[in-house]
Image (cartoon, rainbow, N blue to C red; front, side, top):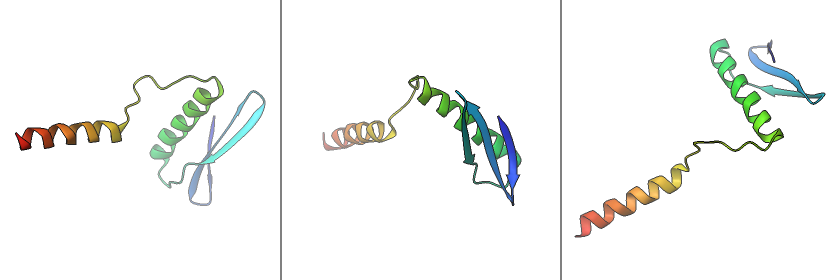
Length: 76
């Protein structure tokens, strides 16, 4: 994985199965760009090998469930 700067913005470039991937990290901060690059690389690997996210939480469902419980508790 190669992190480099194009102008003021950091980019990440890597090869997977002999295919070149290039993405903008959309940041000027190197530390943030390194975190974003690692996440992009991990997401690409997950997509390539169909690996699901283990602890993926659907925030909308959790919010709606919590809201419903709150409304029910207030109407009693």
